[in-house]
Length: 166
Image 1: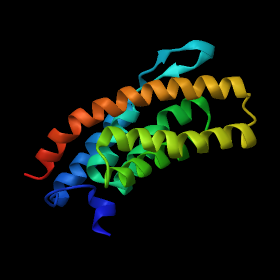
Image 2: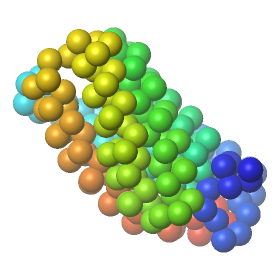
Image 3: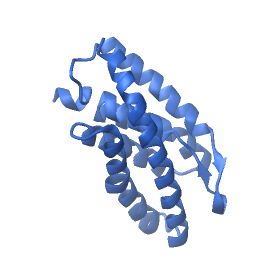
Image 4: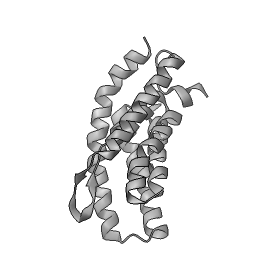
């Protein structure tokens, strides 16, 4: 049960550092979610998944899901799409679960391709009635964002993990 909260650690994280890390990464996720770059079809590039992957892979599934939910608040509010909260909470939780076994960049990409993407496609197509070509464009943009964010989270996770376990 401790692995669910602590993530993949060689040493136990001090609770105060874990909470500080959670709040700092949550703020980072929310701020990154508000920074957008235009993309084709009126879509936007955003890189707040970096914070979600970082929290999931270092702090564990519960904190990853919470950071995903917090990070999804900005885009959810701006687009009027509450499902973004669910997608990103699942992304962080899945990343944390996969990170118990795999490196952060592999765990992050597995979370996107095996959990986030299928849920988004099913909900988008059958509940929200989003046209397939729009879902395809969103999927491609998200895949590009998540590949970049997974790589960055993998690089920075080692330093964060070292700081948390000191």
